[in-house]
Image (cartoon, rainbow, N blue to C red):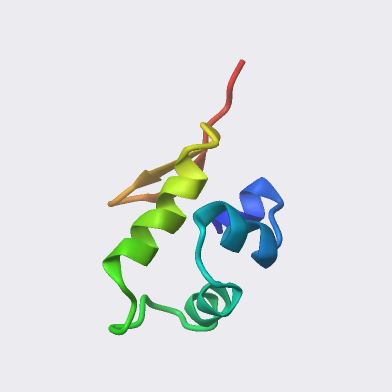
Length: 69
């Protein structure tokens, strides 16, 4: 969802998070976070999104696009 809000391709996310393209594809192919997912990988992906200043994660309510005026 956050990737869509930013209009990023899978390749762009992989590059910005410094993770493998196949890793991003694998994570996106399932409905929930797979047990095998590494915490560091998930943190890198979340950081890539939040570093833009345009995405905010709320553990209870989901993903938000930050509107900068």
